[in-house]
Length: 377
Image (cartoon, rainbow, N blue to C red; front, side, top):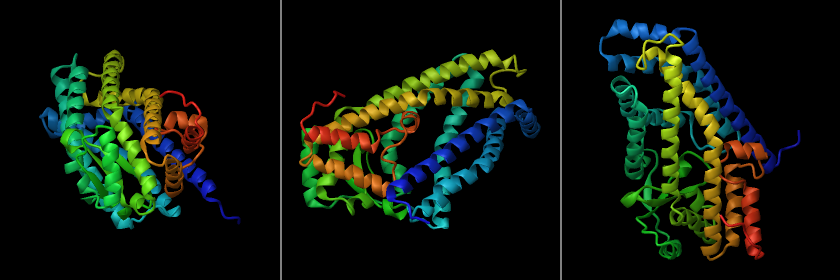
């Protein structure tokens, strides 16, 4: 059997990941619909009423049982995509026990974050049935700001070890770029991405005094200084164009609109489906179903906005890094190391990708180097 080229492997890997992700999403949605329409949600509600008279304990019991049941069906997809597939394509450095520990840690962190939000949601639904959508949107906005401020210092270190970058030459280059972009750099940190994966990445994270650039050791060890500088310039471009704040604003608007539409549709369907009121536990899956459909409709718009911002950051990197050509080689190396499909189908890119394809990004570099006019972004 003829061995697949790296590009063929990337296409197959991305295709399998996409199929698994879509299958998991479809199954989750169908299970929610069946849970609601077959009466199981009503039976679970009645069971919680037999155990306690406290409305919030009933809510937590309902969510715990329903969430656990759903996770039993979706776990095989997560295991296949997150462990088996990554090992099949030699991208993972995790043992099975490492993967299990990381998943447990993720779930515990998710529970710590999600539990207060879930209780806030039910409190608002119980006490402010007509305006819960507005106040919950406000709570989520404030919580996201707080999380953006604290996550780099409190949450990320739970998963990775961070240490200040100690490469003097790289630091000088980055300080130059930060000065050009008027970026008040709070820190440039290296983190041990290699403990989990062979993939490489860098990111601009945090708000205010927690703002920082984080660079995976897999990138630092496999890329030249020119390539790393170009990647860093891309991240500075996100700061200069205020992408983080713009995305937060867009996300906040999306949240307000989504919850408002969910409120209108939810109230319209409650009595038709025989539920006693908005805080009826048996009706809560209906909100999840409505919001799932809403996210399906708006996610292509969110991805289009993200791709637009990525293009802006790419152009900034080309204009301000000392070796623009290195940006193309960095993109190609990232594609090779992360096993990314350089040229996905246009529909796949439109619906699912938050970044332009590698082919389009490299073409932009070539046009820039040839002095061609690049469409303003």
